[in-house]
Length: 409
Length: 80
Image (cartoon, rainbow over all chains, first blue to last red; front, side):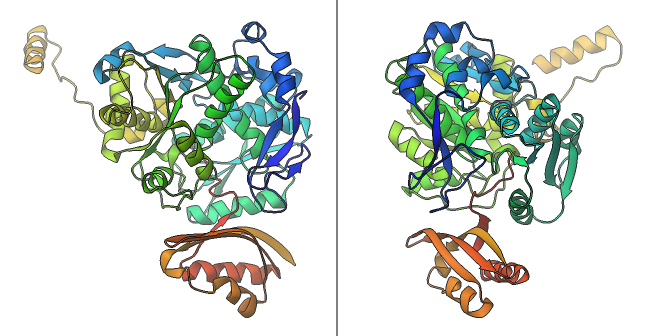
């Protein structure tokens, strides 16, 4: 942790030592890790990064943990794919898909959880915990197993079996919380106060959030040490959006890339778009909403980083855009049918929102655009509905040929 | 005695209601406001509540019953 200075309040700028804290004692604002960027700039170069491992840990100089103790299940350095087929359909010559659905537990959550688990061991926590409805629980369970920590996964009692099994296989203690979403939310917040556990997205949140920066670093490196003209990022808490931008800014500050002029667009689902609604109405604060979306991984009605995501939108000239609920599955299928990538509903939101941004003239044909696909489609199969219409044939060549001809007509 | 850190979000129609005052007077809860933003169409207040355990819970149930949204200061912590 050679380059970390302190934790700093995002609101009143009060400083705190590096401890498992997430809120300022004065204003209760969120805390963020602050670095000695001069020291970072002196210690890194393109060459030093390129000689690192093919994981997110090649960027350890920008992370708030000791690399020697990294809990690494081979997360990161995921493919950046030049999406020529999808680009042709949308009218974009330089469209790239950052495919983070190929991480070890099939979502980008492995990035923040890898950092958090490492930090939890440094703090000598014995229990790793989270509250989740999907991707996060799988990642925490996997990292807890790798780290040899006792792991507790809390989830709403009405969660789908597939998601529960996807985390339970790693052997954590699974806790089903009864009651409404709000009751579960408040209960788990109190749990974090009552137990000396490393709750990855509560008391460990400042460190957790830092892991997402590595998506920004990777995209810049994979584009040949350049920031893209546009990023289209899915929005839940808003943290991923702010941290990808922080990553690009840090690379710029360290002299690894030229000035980033990236427009940081944020994509939310129509049924849960509090940040986009605030952006469109010109507010600097986010009005909480009740999520009603099929994009469950983006269903955060009271987003913790909402105001900061709004700042990034305005500072970079980005646009907050929502995908209509009935277009999310279309977005999933369009990406699958053009690029062979099956993403979950959050990815459908990104692709549908990308289409809208192009249609609105926000993204031009020759501009370098990166769309972030953050989770695997097999995680949300239930959302796909019954869209398969097979050719039904007897095991007879003539019957099949006739039916095939009919289908093609 | 327990302390709880919470965020109240007021819908437009409740902005003028003295909800925090009543928590003190009717429930005997000590309220300590740390940050707030009140606009024409919405308002939020981040505050600390101190009181007897059951009393703080009763007070929060009453706040929710008025239509004010009560969240942990970190917002929604149940992630996808």
